[in-house]
Length: 144
Image (cartoon, rainbow, N blue to C red; front, side, top):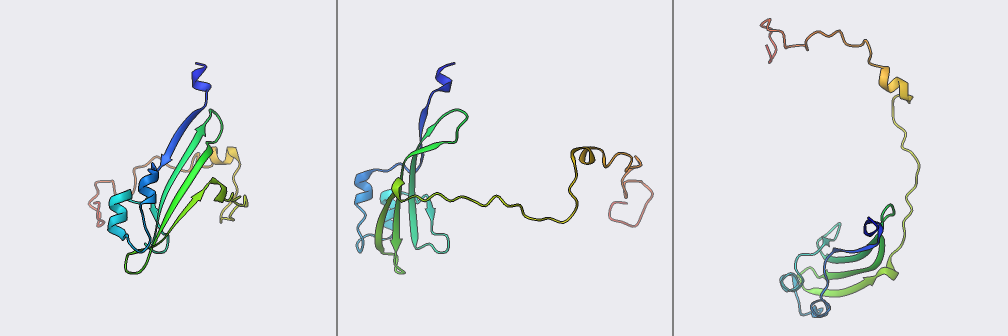
């Protein structure tokens, strides 16, 4: 039971091999050679397929807490229009930036209901009769 409360470390994402990552050379390698050396990228560029990202993170997982990143590495491989490697950039945990989202609420149409209104607002609203179209009365609709 005490072991369940301990810290564990997990690898998330790409598993780096330093020799393979260092083997990618700008001006020499192309998309096919990068994919055969490193495999498929973790993610491609958002607006174009000119940059491939290989992302690896090692996190410490503790019960009740959010995972805590211990190491982080991003290998960004940028390609030219011809598909040849232009640049290879390495980013680490020191390059990460924390982003704090705004906690504002988006206004919506309708009313704000309290707990009891949400539970009891439909009491007595339905008559208990069968849904429209389910009576076998030979109506003109698609269901009868």
